[in-house]
Structure formats: C-alpha cells, structure tokens
Image (cartoon, rainbow, N blue to C red; front, side, top):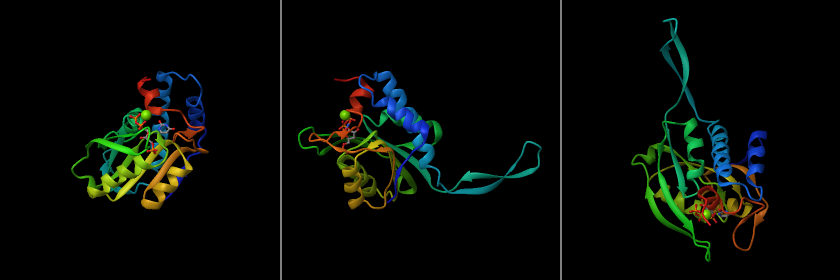
Length: 209
Ligand SMILES: O=P(O)(O)OC[C@H]1O[C@H](OP(=O)(O)OP(=O)(O)O)[C@H](O)[C@@H]1O
Ligand SMILES: O=c1cc[nH]c(=O)[nH]1
Ligand SMILES: [Mg+2]
C-alpha cells in the first residue's frame, strides 16, 4: 500500500480555503470538486500506456500513446463522495461509476451500508474510491470489502483529508490499496471527527444541518 499526501500548491491552497469557519456550501462544493480533479491527476500518474498507430493530420501513420488495458470505475461513497465526483469525471469521462452508500453511525462510529450499484465487470477494472474524509477508516474498509467480494483486485482511494488512525486501520486490513490525499491531518477527536479537518463534509456539500 502506498500513502500519498499530495503537496501540490494548488491543492494545498484550495484545501486551506475549505477549512475556514463559515465557508459557504457553494464554495465548499466547488473546492471539493477542484481538489478531487487535482487528486485524480496525481492518482492516475502511474497508469500504464501503450503505443498505437493512427493516421495523423498529414495522412501519414503516427505512433501515439493510449492508456493501456484495465479500465477504471469511479466509486463515490454517498453522500459526501458526490461532491468530488464531477471533478474526477472531468479527467476520466469514460470511466463507469459504481455508487455505494454508507453512513457512519454517530454513536458507534460504525459504517452502515444502505446502497450499492457496482458495475458488473468490476473485476476487470481499477476502482477509484472517492470520499472527502477518511476518519476511523471503517467506511473505507467496508467499501473495499464490498469491492473485493465482487472480484475487484485493483483499488485506489482519493480523500481530501485523512486521519493517521484511519490510514493505519485500512493499512492493517487492506495493505494492497493505494491512498491519495490532500492532507494527512493530526488526529481524531472523541467524536471521531478529523482535526483540524473540515467538519462534516457531507453537511457542508449538501447544505444540511
Ligand atoms: O472513516 P470513517 O470514520 O468511517 O468516516 C468517514 C465517513 O464519514 C463521512 O460520511 P458520513 O457518515 O458523514 O455520511 P454522509 O456522506 O452521508 O454525510 C465521510 O464522508 C466518510 O464516508
Ligand atoms: O471529520 C469528519 C469525520 C467523518 N466525517 C466527516 O464528514 N468529517
Ligand atoms: Mg456526513
């Protein structure tokens, strides 16, 4: 498993704006999408390419590079993952989308699964899980369990913010999954919120509460 904290100035600048007290839902949503886009650029850096011959604009044969072999399915985790989805899809518009729905029980902090619609050929694809927050890791572990139970073997996750506790939990159970995040934050508080974190990302994206 590789854990990648992306230090790009654009990502750090945009994430900093998201952390401000009183940030509007409109700004938070736009920034979540933009950082999701930039994280996708980083996470796809190592996709294999192959050379194929085409007819170039002069009519002469020309060798170009195309992304090779395995295709991607993007896996947004409802609800908050939807806030990053359009930014991700702008870079990989032909990817299939596998939606999963889980929420974290506020008292037990355990993930509760309520929906999944995973593409039928997920075993032939790289899954790119998308969620703003990796806190205790329970939601991510449950999502990876689901994808693996359907035969998916290549899994990556994109997160705006990740807690060290959650990364460690995921690493101990799913050491093969690569993580890309804009920030590994400090710690979880007693309610399982990431500090300094972003607060409740789902509520900010959807304007609830
Ligand atoms: O790592 P964990 O401790 O499992 O917590 C992370 C999960 O919590 C948040 O979702 P939430 O339960 O708030 O659902 P929502 O997206 O519907 O707001 C977040 O978007 C992750 O899915
Ligand atoms: O800090 C956190 C932890 C879980 N879910 C969130 O939205 N924020
Ligand atoms: Mg939430």
